Image (cartoon, rainbow over all chains, first blue to last red; front, side):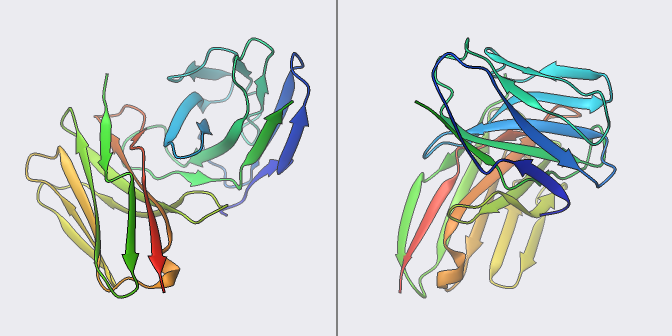
Length: 114
Length: 110
């Protein structure tokens, strides 16, 4: 698992509520990422951060927000503006800000919005 | 934007049969990575290919990167039940972010 933790593993929320997913890494990696995975689908990038206090939108950022106040933490907030938030959310980190690096994934959080 | 297409989406084989998944990009890639996700798990890095025409092997797994650096394949010889899972390719164009293919879900009949 590479020292990346995500909590909780399962999360249930009522429609219209914001919810924050936790992601922590102790690998001293510079870059961190949030992906969304739907059943039978690949990984779609929501947001990524290459350094502290900086982050960029991915391919499906609408309805999500992030912060990167500390190198080891990259929480994701799923807002009520996200139309279809039920999905499996994966956080990842990589040791470099670009180039020939690999991504280490956390165990994921399965979010269900009722 | 950059797209990475992966086929087939699903593959069911008998244990002992071979398996191949293919990955194609609309643009030239600087490198390509392969990941495996076990059922209920998270993606785990398998390998990275960088050079045109590169071939790498990991026991029964053979990875290839095309000469034009636009396609790649993963071949598993004599599948075992431990090979079950979804295999993803992920390509990078220059220093841009990784783009993942849709994945190929492999199931095996023992």
